[in-house]
Amino acid sequence: MRVVVQRVKSASVTVDGAVVGEIGQGLLLLVGIKNDDDERAVDYVADKIYGLRIFEDESGKMNHSVADVGGAILSVSQFTLYGDVSKGRRPNFMEAARPEKAEPLYERFNERLREKGLHVETGVFGAMMDVALVNDGPVTIIVESKP
Image (tube, rainbow, N blue to C red; front, side, top):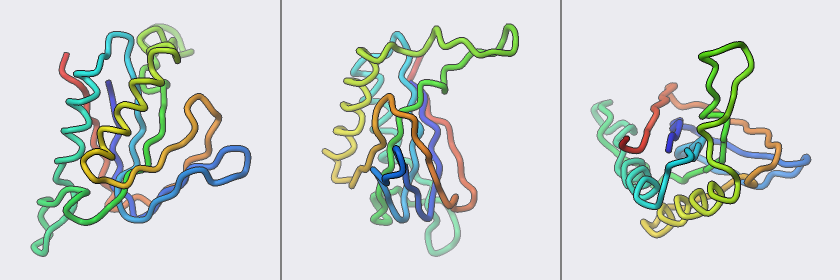
């Protein structure tokens, strides 16, 4: 599992001209599920992101988590995170999980974050989405499950 974590002042996702998910301060998560991912990988990454200290304290040091600052999550599924361009110029997505496997794991990931008390908004799995954000920093981190 691979998640691009962006600290944001605000973010939204739109499908067919309608906003389907929107947050203020928090984290925009671009979520990729790999062929061999399982529930343990999802739980590991959710736990890591929940505790990720990338918000500044009163001294300007990154010491606070999204929960500490009362932030929210906007989670957007993105199989293209597993696009391989090592050969040729067009990416192949052989490592990305098929939708029938990826969607339940993506839903579990979001539910795991909700269980921890976070407000989680989402895009629409498999849809063409327009994602807008105001990056805070910018701060962008990649979190991956253990091999």
